[in-house]
Every structure is written in structure tokens, then in C-alpha cells.
Length: 277
Ligand SMILES: Nc1ncnc2c1ncn2[C@@H]1O[C@H](COP(=O)(O)OP(=O)(O)OP(=O)(O)O)[C@@H](O)[C@H]1O
Figure 1 (cartoon, rainbow, N blue to C red):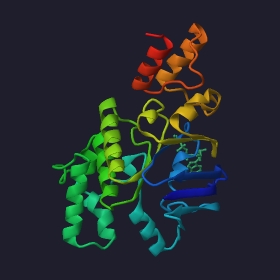
Figure 2 (cartoon, protein in one colour; figure 1 turned 60 degrees about the horizontal axis):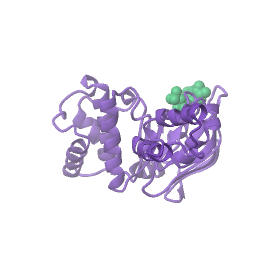
Figure 3 (spheres, rainbow, N blue to C red; figure 1 turned 180 degrees about the horizontal axis):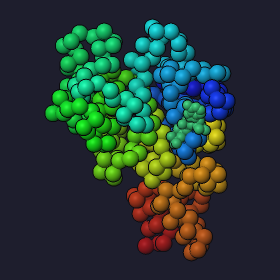
Figure 4 (tube, rainbow, N blue to C red; figure 1 turned 135 degrees about the vertical axis):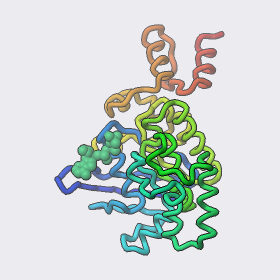
């Protein structure tokens, strides 16, 4: 569905932000890219819809390399929707309605189709009724949802979200994640960047860990978080529940056999079994 193969990218000042990065999002997957500040997550994501062109390597959408001409980029942007880390970088029209309409208008769709898409997208993100508001009058969580609506209005097959829960309170974060989960169940493949290790096991099918512009681990949440050394090496921490299991293993000799629980339900099952209750 979406592939970045051996991407190398250097900024103009000489910072080598990506050094041979290969990641893949399969059909209908939710993939998370985990990495500390400055690891290269945003730089990689800006390659996914052709905003950045790699110095080396290539990005493929539905098996075809991105073409960096106007037609090619329009084609990619109708398939791959990128939601930036900071919604203020994305929302610039005077009203929510105009903002969400911007992408579909650029696709050359009829006024009627554009209006339908705006209505449908705002409904999906729970922002109907905000059409006339200026985006800068919205809260952080509302801005994120309008930014997502703007991408949804393009009817993408793949959504790329840079830290979709950062800066949101727990309820706001949970609303956004539930929305992404729903969109995924409707057939959209998703890749998210984050350092929120507690939420990741709840939604991601597969994880990549990036450090200093290189992928240092790939696998299911359980495979990745069982590799405690790599997680710490990437300057990340274990999910709280796994950390509790790690302490119980060290201090109370409870053997989790290399597979720490990551969610409350996994913990319940494993604790009941290990503690023989
Ligand atoms: N415009 C730029 N010019 C020069 N260097 C940059 C630029 N933007 C980012 N970098 C550098 O590239 C590297 C990767 O940055 P990037 O923003 O991709 O990291 P990130 O993983 O998204 O971090 P964060 O979690 O803080 O958003 C960092 O060393 C950063 O300082």
C-alpha cells in the first residue's frame, strides 16, 4: 500500500535526518512509528505524500514510485493524506468549512460534491456545527479533528498522522484514537508517529522504532516491547503495564517468559495465570 525504501534525506544545513530508512504499511494496517524527539519521524512522514523528495531511495504508493511533477503529486495527495503534528501548520482558511473544502476543490470536484464531502468529513470527526468558525478559535483537540476532516475530504486510502495525540488531554486523545480506529475499520490504512508508548499497544498492529534516522526495530507491539534494551536505547520507555511486569519479574521472581503484558486485559490474564489465582 505505502512503502518507503532505503530513504536517505539530508537538510540543507547538512543534518542527515534519515539514513537508509525502510518502512511499509500494508493494506488495512495501523502502523506506529516510535521515536524520541529529533529521531526523524516528521522528516519521514513528509516523504509519504511527496512534500520531501528523498536524496536516495524511493517512496511507493500502491506499488508505484511517486512522480514529483504536478500531476504525480496531485495523484499521490488524493491517495495519501498527511495530518501534520501542529494543526496550525495545516489550517489556514478563514473558516472551518473553507478549510475542509480546500483539498477537494483542488481535485477539481463539483461544488455539490465538495459540499457533500465537507459535511460528511466534519460529521465523521464530530465537528458538525463548527462550519462557520475560524479554525484559530478552536481548541487544540478540535483543530486536530478539523485537520483530520480536511484530509478525509480527499477520501484517501492511506492516512499519515504525525503525533495525532500530542498536546491533547486523555479524553481528546481517546476521541482521536477511536476515530482512527473507526476509519481503519472502514478500510483506510494508517501510519502514526508517536512517543506515547502506553496508547500504542491499544491500536497498532505493527511498530517501527526509529533512532537517529535509522529503523532499529520492527515487529508486533509484543515483540517490540519485549526487547527492553532496544526500547531504552531509543530513549523510549516501556508501557506502564509492561514496566510493572518488569519490576515483578526482577523483584518478585515472576517469570513472564520474555513477553510482558501491554494492556490491562493482557495483564489481567497473565497476572491471574502467573499468580495462580
Ligand atoms: N528544517 C530543518 N533544517 C535542518 N534540520 C532539521 C530541520 N527539521 C528537522 N531537522 C533535524 O532533523 C532531525 C529529525 O527531525 P524530525 O523533526 O524529523 O524529528 P522527529 O522525530 O519528528 O522529532 P519530534 O518528536 O520532536 O517531532 C533532527 O535532528 C532535527 O533537528
